[in-house]
Length: 112
Length: 113
Picture 1 (cartoon, chains in turn orange, yellow):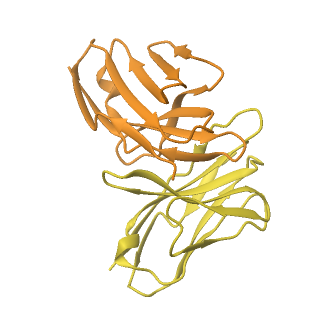
Picture 2 (picture 1 turned 60 degrees about the horizontal axis):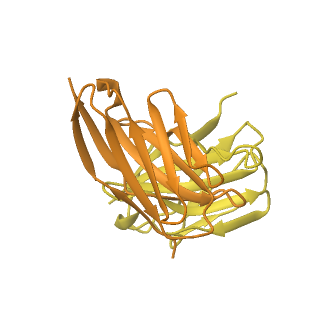
């Protein structure tokens, strides 16, 4: 069945450093790849997404890259700040059904 | 707009009891989904719907039923609760046309003893 693998499961960086989280997906029909941030006790919130016709997308300190051939996509956070500390989830899906399969999450800790 | 609302916020059930988790959205979104979140497992899709009257199974549908009689509401029913269903349940909705972003509700924390 469809599967999304996410690595690493935990990531600790110093404030100001960059953080990279990687995901791979199995369903070649996937064409939509969002990233969600979840703070403790809160609901997941979309931070950035990319569609399969685009290789890279940036929004200020956050960027996502997609390699459809290898079925890889990655989240890059530059100049990390303590408020970036949270759990980050990648997901893969098809826009037609809006069915999303999530990765298992990465706990990012930004040390001041 | 209230967005996506879920009730109750917390619930404790005994094994074998049944209950319905409520989810409603006031954004006229066509797509709605139910997820469960367990430590270390991420968000797993239970059931989803692409419109009123249409539902389909996700990754972990066993033990759960859904229906979508209106665009606004998407209740999740547990027919006979089991301890393995102890989890946090999130409902989400999405316009599904120009944007695929899913908007999540605040969640329901369910404990089955």
